[in-house]
Image (cartoon, rainbow, N blue to C red; front, side, top):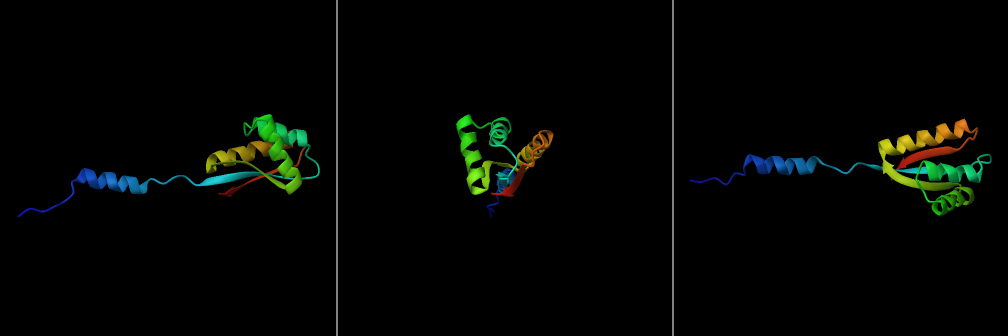
Length: 104
C-alpha cells in the first residue's frame, strides 16, 4: 500500500508563498492654503518628492486650482516620513502647508 503525501519541503514552500503580501500603499497629498507660496510648494515637490520642475509645477497647479495635489504613492513608512519632512520644512519657513496621507 502506498500513500501520496506531499513532502515537507512542498508544504513549507506553499505556506511561505501564502504568507507574503504586498505592503499597503498610501497616497501623499498636499493641500491648498492662502499663505504658502507656489514657489515653496514647487521646491518641496522637487526636494522631498524628487519631481522634475515641470512635474512639480503641474502638481502645484493642482493644489492651487483643485485644493489638493497628489505627490506620490508610497509604503506606509516612506509616506509617513515624507509627510513629516514636509511639515518640518514648512514650519521652518513659516508656512502652514498641510500634507496628509491616505490609503490607496
